[in-house]
Amino acid sequence: MSDNLPGVPETLKAMLLAERHESERVRHLIKELQRHRFDRKAKSLPEEQMLLGLENVEQVAASGEGRSGRDRP
Image (cartoon, rainbow, N blue to C red; front, top):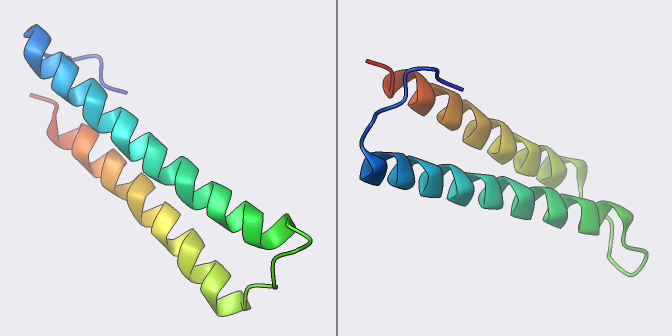
């Protein structure tokens, strides 16, 4: 997290909403992976599909890290 946050409330609000949206996307991906992994009724996911889901989570996390680095003055 950056210590150099902008002082404009509208910009801070937009940044917060973007982070919340990204967080929700990651939570959704994790829930989907958990449901497929642990739900007794669900069919097993092939290992390749599970790895693709994890790759998506990693890409979202890397995207967030890159974005926060660009927000710094």
